[in-house]
Every structure is written in C-alpha cells, then in structure tokens.
Image (cartoon, rainbow, N blue to C red; front, top):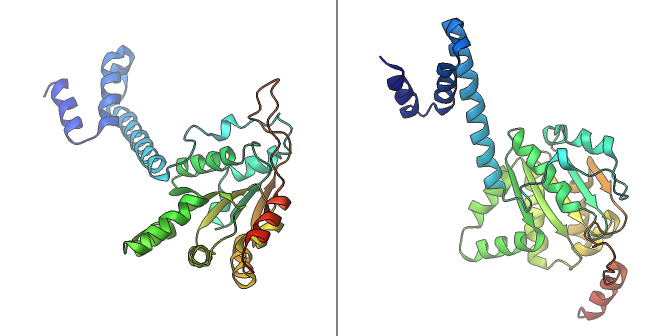
Length: 265
C-alpha cells in the first residue's frame, strides 16, 4: 500500500489529525529513522489535539459569547479599575466551576465586566466545560417566548445542563412577576449543581431592589451569593476616546428612584 492510499484511508476515517501528522513525517528526512511505534505515537497525539480543538470550537460556537476573542491572556491589569490580578488568574483555573460556585462581577459602565465574563467563559470552553451566554434582557425574552410556544421545558433543560451560565448586565430595570418566577426556577435548578457568572453595574447589595419582591429576592440571592467569588471593579470607562468627554450617566440611585416613582402604588 502506497503512502497516498494510507492518507486517503485516514481522511476517510475522519482521522484528520493523524493524516496531517503522517504527511509531515513523510516530508521530514529525519523521520525515516524513527521507530514505527513512535510514528504511531506522534500521529495519535496529533489526532487527539485535533479532536480537542474541534470540540473546543464547537463549545465556543454553542456558548454564543458576546466577545469570542476575549481571552485570559489578553486581560489588561494595568488599567486603574481595581482588578486583582492574582484573584482573577486563580479564577482562570476554573476550580470555581468544579465547586459549582458563582462569579459576580460588578462595576460602572465601561470597565470591562462583559469582557472579563467572556474571557472566563472562553477559558471554561477550553477546559471542556459547556457554556451559555445571555444578556439579561434576551434571557428573559427567550424564556417568555418559550412559555408561549411550548418550548420552555426544552430551553429550561438546555440552560440547566450548561456547566457555566453567563448572565450579563443585571439591572437596572425592576423584574416583573414572570421574570422573578423564571429566574427563580433557573437559579434553584442550578444551585449547587452548576456554575454561574453575573455582571452588573449595580453593587450586589442593590440587587435585592431589582428583584422587587422580598420573598423572591431572599431565595434568589441566597443561592447566587452563597459561596460566590466577587469582583468589584471601579474606575473610568475603558471605552473613552482620548480627549473626548463622555456624557455623564445618571446614577443608579436616581434610576431606582425614578422607577419607584413611575411604578403604580
């Protein structure tokens, strides 16, 4: 059997990694002196790496991260935003996923909360964990739509199975009764079984107000905050263009006050 036939068989069997390694070995004169067993070892390692990469790309695609290029290696620790490098690099080891814990990232607009969440999600995919990303408005909208078209159970199971659920941008809008119920079901199903990342411009202490119901707030936040890892960022927006002045946004205290005033008695 000639080398072309061997390559074709490997491709037919979808052993693309082994086929690629075989092709490289054929053109390397030094490889002719390698023991046949070592050839097999090199080809098998190439196939394993190839399959790992394909599985990673599949998980990354399914995660639907807001920023698929966000990576731990590219995190900026020089910007003044109170990001603890040692703590974050420890989170990058993904032990918090094995512990079924939460990571709560808070801070003002523009300090990189979503990027950090996506970087952790990217690394989780790399370490063979399934990830699902939602912005909070889309999360609630999809759950509401699923209830209407009788696909809620399927979506609920999909969310429940994810090793890491990322909920980006908690608040500032008050939750409706339906949103509280859906969030409670998801949080309760995942508690102590799966890991969660939440980002918010609001400090964790203000999340109680957003749930807008004491009973649900106690139940939801007790499960999310228990055994959580908190990253509280602060500092100027990283999106600001040099020399430009961004319009000042209203404080969350003011937003909450306006929403309370607008809510019916």
